[in-house]
Amino acid sequence: MSQVRSSSRKVSHGAGFWIVAIAFLLVMAYSTVPTPLYPLYQELDHFPVSIVTVIFAAYAVGVVFSLFFLGHISDWTGRRRMLVIAVLVSAVSAVMFLAVMSVPGLIAARLVNGVSVGILTATATAHLGELRQAARPDENAIVAASVAGAANIGGLALGPLIGGLFAEFLPDPLVFPHAVFLVLLLLAAVALLAVPETVATREPRPAYRPQRLATPPASRRIFIAAGFGAFAGFALFGLFTSLAPTFLAGTFDQHDHLVAGATTFSVFGAAAAAQVLLARVPVRVQLGIARLACAVGLVLVAAGAVLPNLALFLVGGVVSGVGVGLLFKASIATASALADPARRGETLALIFLIAYCGLALPVLAVGVFLTFVDQTVVLLIFAALVFIATVVAATMMRARKAQA
Image 1 (tube, rainbow, N blue to C red):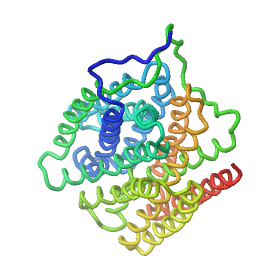
Image 2 (cartoon, one colour; image 1 turned 90 degrees about the vertical axis):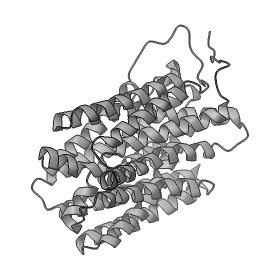
Image 3 (tube, helix red, strand yellow; image 1 turned 135 degrees about the vertical axis):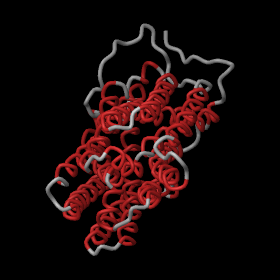
Image 4 (tube, rainbow, N blue to C red; image 1 turned 180 degrees about the vertical axis):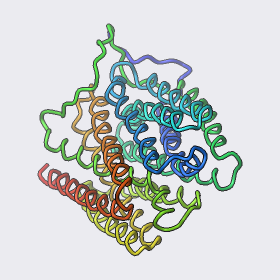
């Protein structure tokens, strides 16, 4: 018999919605805190910039691994349980960062941190939509999608800024950020225990299986377009998350940790702000804005790298961030709308799996090319490829919306 378990100790669905959003924000923020700290780790352990891409890729591999094996199982094990597990796994990664600061330790800590994000993203996105539906059944679903997107991308934006502030103004920048987030994550895990469950438990529980790599059969073409948009958008995020400090130091002679954190924050912050501020604009219009912003922004990023002009580079990052934020939100909203309610977590896990492949694979390629090609040339090639991918994805999704 299926039932959603309840308890007098649980908060309301409305309050639970915000608890999940805050926990989502915290885990995503912690996942990007190391971005401005990589130069400090390099100084400590004397490793080349190509190793930074390996450390970053370990995170992305952890995300992809857990999305494939764990990201979908909240559909039958329960949203709350998997969220608590995700937050605790993130706390474990904080302990690992504190314990070992050599390259093997950093790779292992980032891998575990990625696992936590892979468990969290689809689960939290689905849980937020269900909690909001229960609390406000007459409200447009785009509100929950916008909060989920803002928590996801906004957390990714805050992490580098927080890391940069710790590195620039506080003692022990390789210890203090991880210790603070360890405490916050443990508090978030406790708070999540009070959130209502929204998935009916099944008796007997279904046998475990990995994520199905299958699109919704009735709408395969539009789902593929959404997946392409998510892949292309996260490729740009990957560049700014993993290699921004390196490009700032090598191309613009900027070694300030706060500048490195603020640069990544500006890109993700623009993406999160666009998702919230344009939430009530029709999706087709949002995709038109996304296409234009990605095109203009990436041209400015390339021009800033060639001149070189830091202001132009930063403005380009912000403008392209707006485009990618809208493109990614449209991808998630499209996937969620196409999903069977009983398999929403699984469908969202697949779209996040595609997105994080976009985060990992291009950055690994960049790391390889950086060993024998000038970094400005690498950046120009990367920007050109992401330009094509984002514009094509936005055009495809916009055309599908016009036909719908």
